[in-house]
Amino acid sequence: MTATAAQTHVRRGSSWQLGRLAMGLLAVTVLSGIALVPLYSPSQPLASLEAIESGIRWAWLARALHWVSASGLLVITLAHVVEVLLIRADQRLSRAQWWRALCLAPVVVLAMLSGFVLQGTADASAALAIWRAVVTSTPAIGPSLARLTLGLTASDLSTVAIHHCATFTLVIVLLSADHARRLVADSRALILTALATLCVAALITVPLGPPEAPTDGTLLLGPWYLLGLQGALRLWPVAVGWFAPLLMLAPLAALPGSDAKRRRWMLLSTLALTLGYLGLSVHLLMVATGWAQ
Image (spheres, rainbow, N blue to C red):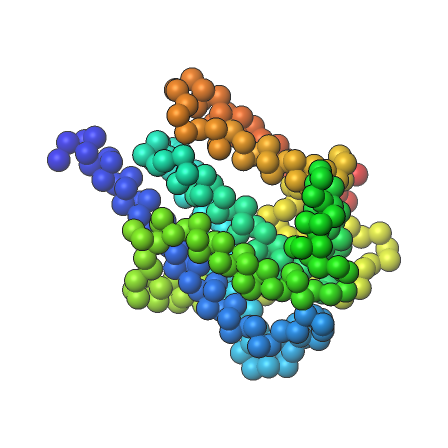
């Protein structure tokens, strides 16, 4: 085997393993979510959360498993996108396949955000209000889209719960269908992934915000994967909430059919935007801890 062939084989093997890991995490996320459905009531989110955390035996572990596997799915999905770009595997995909793959991470974020707001805590309520404002600011269809995705009122979480349990899950499964045909999570991959996430879930405490908004001016932080967007919303108009994600996706969406020079500029643009997002995240954490204003 030549050096080039060996390198290609290693790269494909690495990509294969990341793909199987992602599919395994998706399976664990869905199964643990199904286990939580009977324990949660959208009309009583805090009471449901308290019952899950302390009132129902082992329910806390199911919630921790759901959170860990979902977070792992997002991280592995992003890592897989980076890997695909590094080994130029995107050039072997059709435009439609690449766009479907590219949409996976944003939909996973939306699914996780909907799960975050279902907690009914103070930070969850604040996140829901910001989410509604961002969606409402969408040109032409904003108010209608907000009602469709988030319901009529902030006190009614039924619509969000339906999208979290059904809509986003179905969309993720459909978007990953191309991968699933090649990287079906067999029993070994699923068992190993479940055991690994179960061990992590048993050892950590899932973050849980305060039931009431603090009165001392303490900054409420949103989910870890949206800290950069929260930081941007502190500096710019609410429309940045939908414009910034589109701006970050645009260079990657334009990659199919690009020549080497254009590809380099698209990737450098994505890198610059990513570093800016991380910078906003760090700045927000510094503000929250009193290191910055």
